[in-house]
Length: 76
Image (cartoon, rainbow, N blue to C red):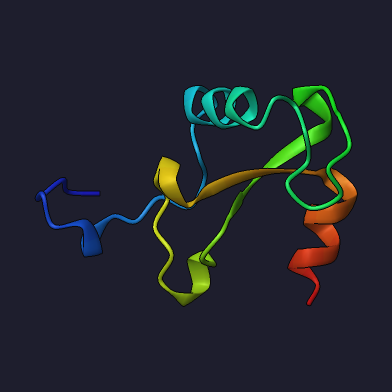
């Protein structure tokens, strides 16, 4: 990849670990769908506005979901 400063040339899909940790702590370890408590290792970062629809990989567009809820959401 050539880093040009033009984000359309490089659009990362995965959230970094620091972002995941900050969002996890902001949510107090609760899945944003089922509202149950999970360890961060049992959760996955999810784009609120889907990446395939143009949602950006930025902290404001990140939520932590338990693995079962994230996989159900991804399947719909």
